[in-house]
Image 1 (tube, rainbow, N blue to C red):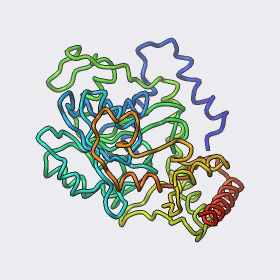
Image 2: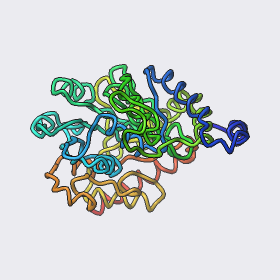
Image 3: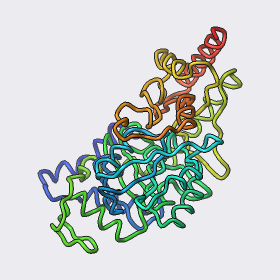
Image 4: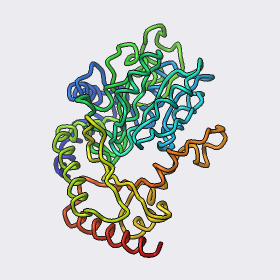
Length: 366
């Protein structure tokens, strides 16, 4: 874990250069390092994970009148990025095995207006990504990966965020690699990279078919001090992923065979990063159970952050969403326990004891 003294040392150079309105030495260095670490041609640093998603859609020429397929089992931020470019989100149900987007539903909902598929790697899981990418290629569609929770996850030996046309990541505090707030995109496509770089800086730089200042863009630049912190933390990516995986497996061991809880094992060929420890809850009123755990000090996606299937989210009702019953059940029964680099053995033991006791009490009260 990064120490305070290390962070202060990393901040000295960018702070000494300020004010430097056009400076981006730290951001440019971060982009080069991210590209090398992930084995891609281009990385584009931006101000947040949501900014990364928005920028990726623009780079892929997704706009008004277009449709984007995305899982109903997603966070609202992914939906917001799609609507921000004027496109229509089309929610796809969860696969029958509870892992990833349902390919038959993807195919059924692909229309002449579909421009991209936007899988979301919740809890660091990349379920079904390779098969989804193969379908997208056959249909002539971009795959824009929301890998904001998937730094360090792999599927069949390929890193999350490098399978599709473009991958989007967050550097928000709490992510495996963070700098407080920020994000980045990864791509091997030169044109997508140039469009993304132009858009995040008000289109002050040219892109293929769009000279500088020929389009409107946004200020999605990553601040230099934050880029410096991201560079520092990126050096420990492998160790950070290893630690998070160890934490998740340790929590699984401590919780053990607790009735009503089933570990959500990764799919074949997938190696998640351990972003969250993940179970399926087979107790009555699973959302209430997750809320009870949150009240007892075990932070989790449903109980703490109110995650729900997008087609049921109040903010999505104006989109006339189709029902996605498996997605609703998958999210409602998802227990994704939040882990952090600073989570210690004592914390894991406390989480496990609380989960076991609350599950027992809940089951007895059914």
